[in-house]
Image (cartoon, rainbow, N blue to C red; front, side):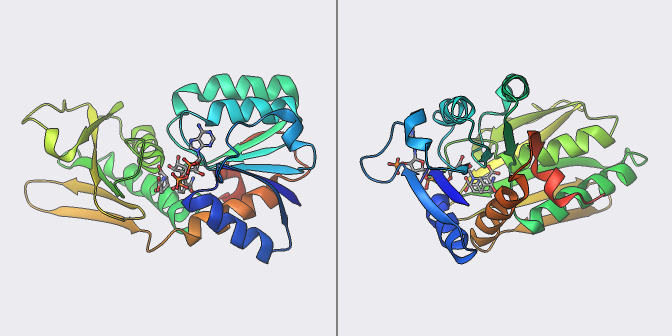
Length: 246
Ligand SMILES: NC(=O)C1=CN([C@@H]2O[C@H](COP(=O)(O)OP(=O)(O)OC[C@H]3O[C@@H](n4cnc5c(N)ncnc54)[C@H](OP(=O)(O)O)[C@@H]3O)[C@@H](O)[C@H]2O)C=CC1
Ligand SMILES: O=C(O)C1=N[C@H](C(=O)O)C[C@H](O)C1
């Protein structure tokens, strides 16, 4: 495939490495040096776009891809409040888009296991649950997209929780989180690639369930695999459709 990389930072550069190893070529890099503003003509040679840019750039990138009829894999996080609107546009344009808060195999296994554990925990109200996510200090969005997906999995299964709330580590006043709320605590530390922990605690014990990314390779390889999966498909998809752990 001829791939346009929308965003050529930490992720874009690693995706280039895996994509070329797997026989694809990179025909455009947005965010590399002076090339910053995407328009439709720039996508004329691309079979596929992969967006790992920034929350304030991604929606425009998606619009340009749809107008140019170029399928797009979206790894950028921080835009999910617009998800339904984007889905409607994709369906109306008969185009294709696949998004995911996290493309690594490990995290997608974690998502599936998280839902199973939450289903068991629904019957044990003595346990409260919270999520902690730790990322590098350059991260722009909070909570992480991955933490939002984990929270949605828990809220789907545990009747006593119906919305998530986000606080940074050092701004959680006592008793501010209501019983129906699922706390996502965000910490920003040095170069951490991404650590997500689900903590169930009762008066007598605690269960912690954790995924730690050692580096970004799993995310990058997963994004290329997702692009290969999306080729020749039409519609609106998520990374769950690629892994399909049921
Ligand atoms: N779904 C997943 O599996 C993963 C998702 N992510 C998400 O991917 C995104 C990118 O992460 P990462 O690579 O670490 O970030 P970086 O900051 O390292 O790279 C971002 C890239 O996007 C470019 N960019 C920023 N703003 C704009 C803009 N307005 N228009 C065009 N290009 C822009 C930057 O250019 P410049 O350097 O010139 O500013 C840079 O090339 C984040 O949203 C992150 O949360 C990250 C890892 C895994
Ligand atoms: O910004 C990052 O780095 C990451 N972002 C994604 C997220 O918001 O969940 C995925 C991964 O955790 C790394």
